[in-house]
Amino acid sequence: MRRRTPPLRSGCHTAAPHESAFTLIELLVVISIISLLMALILPAIQSAREAARRTQCLSHMRQLCLGMHGAASRSATGQLPAYGVWGDDAATSATSTQPAALWSWVVEILPFIDRRDLYDRWNFNSRHSNGTNATLIRTFNIKILTCPDDESANERSGALSFVVNAGYAGIDSVIELNRTTGWGNQNGNYHKFDNVKIDWNSNGTVGDKEDNELTRRSGVLWREVVHRLKGNFKAERNQSLSLKEIYDGQSQTLMMTENLHAGGLESPAQMWGDPDARSCTFVLPIRRISRAGPAYFANPPLDPNFPGCVINGARFGNEGRSPWPSSNHPGGVCAAFCDGSTKFVSQDIDLLVYKRIVTPAGSRLNSSSVVAQAILSDRDF
Ligand SMILES: [Ca+2]
Ligand SMILES: [Ca+2]
Image 1: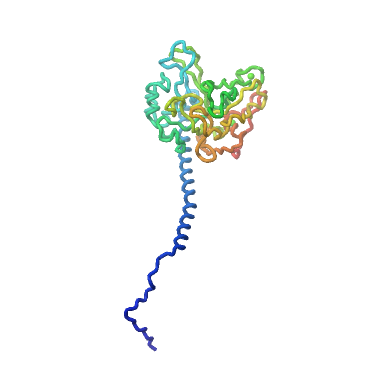
Image 2: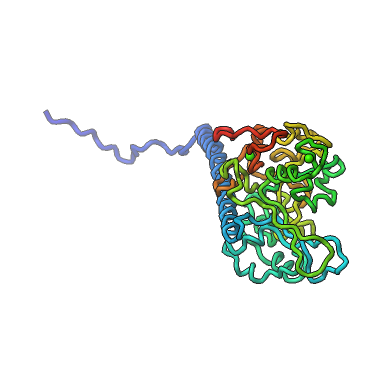
C-alpha cells in the first residue's frame, strides 16, 4: 500500500520558533564548570612552575659543586678551595695587622664553571671591593650563582644565592647573633678553624691541636690567609678539607645550600666576591663554653634564641649577615652534597640529622675524650 505523503502547507515553516541558545541557568552551570576546572588546573600549573624553578636551582648547585671538584683536582694537596681568602692587597700598609678581604670561593672556581674570562681579569693583589674586581662583580651576572626563586639575586649583577658549608662557628652571646640583625660582631669576619674556641676534649686547654682538628671536622670549607706583599700578619694555609678527608661520606655531607641573604655587606649588597663567612657560607652556630664535655661535639645544643640555626629559621634575616640555609621554595632548601648530588632538604629535618650532614668527619673515632657522631643511614634525610 502506498504511503500517503502529507500535504504541503504553503506559507507554514516546520522549524521550531526562534529561542535563545542557552538559558541563564545553563550559562551559570557552564561558568561554574569552567571555574572549577581553573581551580583544579591553576595550582597544578603553579606547582609545575615551582618544581621547574627548584630543578633549575638544583642544577645550578650541581654545576657549582663540579666546579669545586675541578678546583680540588687542580690543588696540589687535593684540598677544596678556601671559602674565603684574606691577605694583603696593594693598598695594605706594612704596619697593618688585619689582612684584607680578598676573594671568595666563587672566584676560586670561576675557571671550572666556564668563566675563565672573568678569572683571568681578577686582580689577586687587590681586595674584592676595589677597582677592577668590584667592576667585574658589579658588571656581570653569573646565572648559575643564583636561584630563580631568590628575588634579591635573580638577574642581578654580582648576585649570589648559594653558600658553602663552613661548619661550626663559635658564638659568644646573643649580642653577636641577634634575632633581627643577624651575625653582627666582627668575629663573623674571622670565622676560621681555630676560632670556635671550645675545649672539645675537656683537657683544660682551649684551642689545642686536637680541639682544632675536631673543629675542622665540623665543616668542609675554611679560610686562608695569603701573605705575599707586606702587612704585619701571619699567613694561614687553606684549611679546607680534601675530598678524601670527608670521612662520613661525600653523599652524606653538605657542600652548599641556598641563602636568601648571601652576598657582601657593601653597597650594592649582592657581591659574589666577598670572602666574609657571613656572606658566602652557612655555619652551625655553637655557643662557646669553657669545657665541652664528651657529647658536645657530636650534638652541640642549638640555642632557641638563635632561630637561624635551623633551615629557613632566618628567612627574613639581614642581607650579608645571616649565614644560615634559607630559600623561597616551600618547605625547605635545595642542597648539594660533596659528591655533587643534589637534594631538597626539608626544613623539618631532625636537627640531630642536620648536625650530622653538616660535619664532614663527625663520625670519625680517634679521640678518647670526645664522643663521635652516630653514622647516618641514607634513609635519615
Ligand atoms: Ca682542649
Ligand atoms: Ca657528618
